[in-house]
Length: 119
Image 1 (cartoon, rainbow, N blue to C red):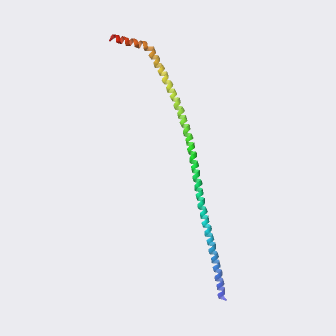
Image 2: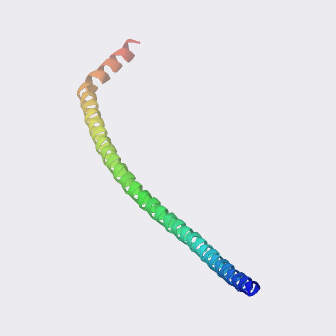
Image 3: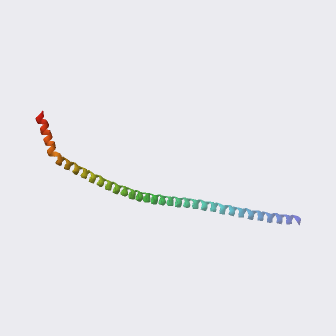
């Protein structure tokens, strides 16, 4: 009778071991599945992060371009104002020189004529 009890106990132990092995295999499959899902999520996050980086880079470029345009336009306006001021001062000095030449032209001609005649 003891032999049949041992066989029954052995059979029960084998059944429990088989159940444990099946459970462990199922857990291993679940872990593999989770690892695969985590890998996919990492890829998706990486793609999203790169997309956001690209978007932010483009926005930064746009902002920098707009700011550069504002600075360039301000500099251009300042240069145009300075240029107009310089041109106006040049015109005033030219008018002054013409006026002095016109005022002293008769005297200059007399001086040249007298110098030529003395020679």
